Length: 179
Image (cartoon, rainbow, N blue to C red; front, side):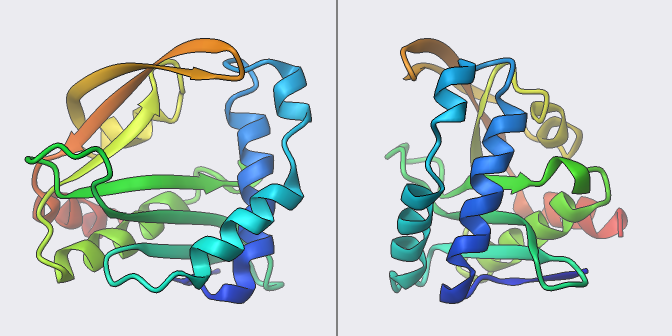
């Protein structure tokens, strides 16, 4: 198992994980029709564009299995909400369902935290659907409720929670202690 920064050639592998993870993660939250119509092609184009952008703040990492297949990814960087208190944001973290609960999420998160700390960023927000079971992952690592918003995905009105790690040093220590 390898955890490393993402490269441009990882776009397709990340897109596959993104689509497959949405289908398993959100199966009880979004319509089956919407999930069935997720396009690998459009996600691949999106990730090609993201990985080609030069940004010192944004970071993307991947988890790769022994055969070189991408089985998880993380994406984060500067806060996108405009909240003056929040400095960093975890944009996305997805791991194939069959590879979850093996510590990959913690390892990917550590990679992002260390990147953000290197930029002098001291806190980080993650947006998660209120009914998403993965919310427990963030809370178990010390993320706490910061704010809530109503969003719409595929015609469904959903509640999204902003969970905050107020001190990335504490999060880093917690992640290192779980190694």
